[in-house]
Structure formats: C-alpha cells, structure tokens
Length: 101
Image (cartoon, rainbow, N blue to C red):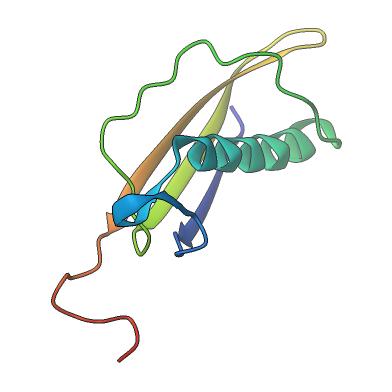
C-alpha cells in the first residue's frame, strides 16, 4: 500500500508543558500532515479524518527531539481509507550540550 514519512525536530515552540514537554496533540497534527501526503499520493487530493481508532503514547517527546513520523494506507474502501501511523524518536539531544552554543 501507499506509504509516507516526514522527519523533523521538535522546537521550543512545540513545547506546551513545563520541562519542554511536547503536547500529544502536536503528534496527532503530524499524523494529519502525513495523512494529507498519503491521500494526495493515492487519490490526488487531500481528505479529512473521521476518527482515530486507537492512540497510545509510549514515551514523552521533548523540544529538541528529532522525530520520524510514518504512515501507511492499509485499507481502501469506496470513500474511505484506513491508515496506520507511528512517531519515533530518532535523535535525542544530549543534555550536556546547550542549544545556544
């Protein structure tokens, strides 16, 4: 089936909570970005989410983390698409190095 991926670094602007913790809604927004790309590749046009069937956050995401967000269309109906998404941390910044150096 059709697959898509984006890689990006979470910035301090993405941090929503104390300790530079990134809001889970930001991760869902990234899933939406990947879904848009998948639908454009597959159907030639973007679509809209009806629902998420399951969302599970396995680890916290912080400003400075590099993420790889992947998505795949797993089922195609007449007017529906089923997709699977995963966000993975691929690089975690070292705590002993300051960003402003």
